[in-house]
Image 1: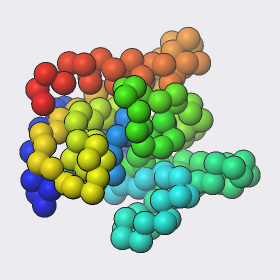
Image 2: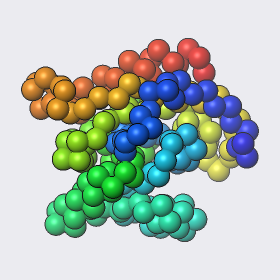
Image 3: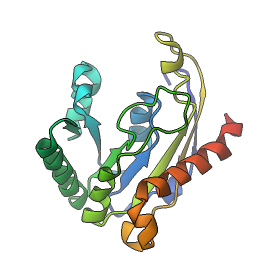
Length: 192
């Protein structure tokens, strides 16, 4: 509202209301975090890189909702964070992760995925919902420090369980999810 952003959501009915969910999305803007927080039902936490602790307001809010911060240079700490998120998912708290590992500042649609984040869904046996964001980068990051009015499309895919995928898709889960993101992004870019 404050940014003058018009938001069109597609597939809100796809989000399960009776279980926690691992939300997996593309990441082009800080607004991706706020958009999901506005639309996700039930308790929600974020798995974020430790560098987010530098941003006082956003980090304070993220800590309030039990978000976790991963140090990608410390494998032992990273494992503890993943285990903490598995526990959150088992306790009914949904978790959002951006498997690109950082905001994508390139002209490419997606950065390479870190597939380890999908272990949280596999171990907690929760569904995965892919969240595709179109045009969030143009709100702020494309022309910092100005905020500009934009039309953003946010699509929630149908949920799926890792256990229901064939062995090949399970082994290459990053590619499987990337394909969903690319397909949704291409379909929705005409609506922006």
